Image (tube, rainbow, N blue to C red):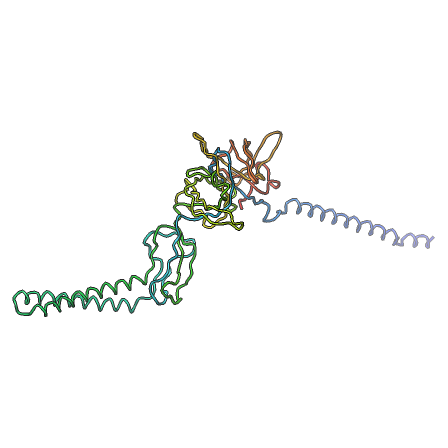
Length: 373
């Protein structure tokens, strides 16, 4: 009896272990569930990085002239400025001032460079002092000669001395001027050949300047085709540097005749790019293609808009482009015209100043925020 009561007082260790194991497993699953929730929330709200706003390349719309004429002949050449001047020194010495770099705009008579002039300036001061003395001597002795105090021979010597002093001042001033280099016309510096501190000798090139008020293209035309080219004939000029622009032009000269590699005759034709005027386009020595057009009386020239083909989208039988307005993508329907090698004419739908997206179209949609490259 007593043994049974004692046995009933024993703790069932197996049941206790089972209960503890179940409790620990429950707590572990609870921790796992909480961790999963934290991770999911972090992924949902974690920023996607600094590149979340896509960058797109845009083209700012501007009109460019294209003639309605029929192309008769195409030829390649190079664009040249109206005139070019390579400026060199006329004196010997150290270059102490060079006020321009390549690409800088200059004005006519602007001081561009200066050679050290200390010795020449000192010489000029001495010659000016001698001239002042000779002038005073002349005035004093003129009165003496008029009064008969000195002979004609003596007065002639004094007069000769005055002329010599004046000539020396003129020479020294010319030598001083030779230490300075001035711009011969309004234009742009395209190259410099020296730097401050260099020793300069007469004839040594310092900088080259071009007159950008007018641009020309010079192309060689074979004898068989030259009869198709006339003075005043319209033309179109295109370049790889500005692939989306077509420049209006006209033939202004047929120049020297030379021989080509096959012994045939070649005439250099100068074509003037019209309606450009003073501008910031860097066209000097740029390769160009010239399309000579048929001269039709009454033909007109219109301003058109040309954009890259890759900017144009066809959607639901409509032609559209993406634009950027205050960094927000918008869409606009356009009407296209002539197609060129890598661009297309836009007849309507775009205006000067519009920013058309030309790359990265696949990464944007209407209403999204973008950055311009």
